[in-house]
Image 1 (cartoon, one colour):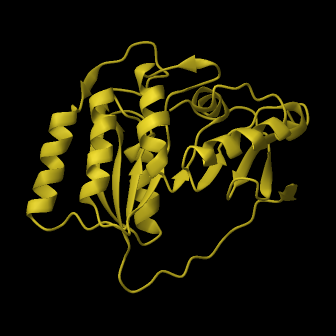
Image 2 (cartoon, one colour; image 1 turned 120 degrees about the horizontal axis):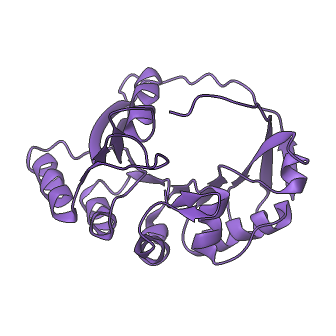
Length: 233
């Protein structure tokens, strides 16, 4: 069920008409997360990116003091209506990341109804990491019950996958089973962006990720060498 594949570079041949992405994620003044990390790489790959900032914070929430503003569900609705009235709400992809409150997350479902039927939804359910929530606990149930049935590609880390499936992941096999649970909730493709279990990391030698393309289908384990250090953005 599990196949190993080394990391490799990929060449993407973009069509003449650039695919359009609506990216609803966080913005930070300092550092590179959310839209600050996503928009430029997407543009380099040939995507046309429209940006909605779910929050504007001084820094990401890993810092001890958080200051800034959060978008509300009503404000998101107004922005979506403006795009629709001006006939530019015609995106090929919706990408969501950090969501500041439940009202915005629920409005994402309404936004999907306004977008073209062919629009694919890529959802990073940013909730927390390493056993710690850094968003409202209320978001978990809304993701599970209202959002996941609409998702094309879901990219949780291990902790987020555990929250959404209500189960603990301690082995690669349990991770594969959790992916099948997420498929059962509606997600077509699941990528566990971190998999910190001994048979994936080989006791810390690697960083593990798991790709699942359907319930009961083959799973792909990606192992990358673990590198110490790195900047804290």
